[in-house]
Length: 111
Image 1 (spheres, rainbow, N blue to C red):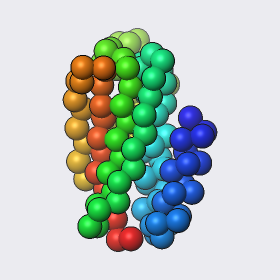
Image 2: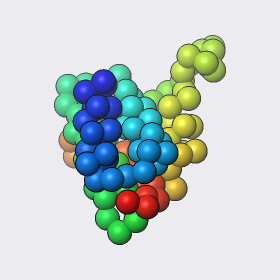
Image 3: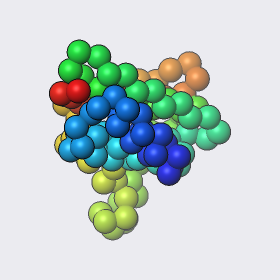
């Protein structure tokens, strides 16, 4: 997911997003694309939209599985990604689509 992280960081820098907000956004991109790569099968789409003080991060994938953490998994190995996204974003939504799943995160952005 290195390519997605670098793409997001470069685009947000071009959009003059402040560094602390850019860092949060890139971390969200990293977590969402990692989940999509793990659970989403073969296709993934990343969309970034900056609109009137809000940054929207949308990751779509072709998976149908909802992320499940094994009961015996150590908390430092699984399940932190969605918690990180919920902590950093002002809102998050997950939608099932005809082609898979779409996860949306929205952050306030002063750019």
